[in-house]
Amino acid sequence: MNHMSVCRISVILLLLLLTLFVGGRGSIAFAGQKGGGSEAIEITSHRLEADQAAGTVRFVGEVVAVQGDITIRAEELILYQANEGQRIDRIEAFRQVRIEQGERVATGQKAILDRARGQVVLTGSPKVRQGADFVEGDEIVFFLNSERSIVRSKGGERVKAVFHPRERASE
Image (tube, rainbow, N blue to C red; front, top):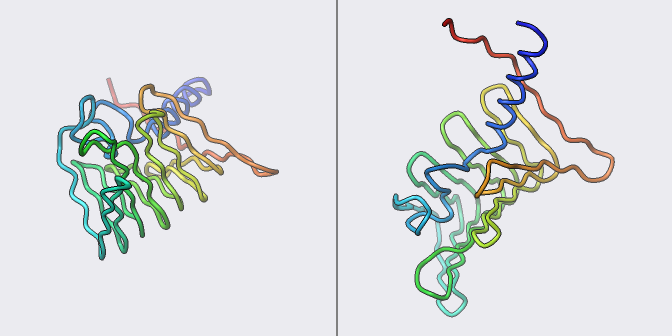
């Protein structure tokens, strides 16, 4: 395999990793809404606190949220509802956040899934991994309406990405 093929495969893998959880099925944050996934979200935790006036539902203690093949795990998860009914506008997950979809895993200390901005922001030593490949920085932003992501680094640190060459299937 020549150098150009390895570079092309690495770029494709980077795009695949950075578009984690963005795509046709919709993200867990906006399930059951127009333009989002139609599967139910099942959330389990040790405690649930609902504040109808504030439009929030807070889950605390070993939270597990599942929609289809996507799972979010965290110590705390807050759903923010829009004024017009049960539509979820934003989800915030805190402490030991882990978002899984098949082989793809994103981890960090905080994740904000924001419908109005059309983005997911992962902070607190965020890392996205698929198999042995990964990308990490201080902040990873996934844009929900496009196949675009940004990995930012602050201070003197640098963004880090590791990709392993894949063998092409025999034609």
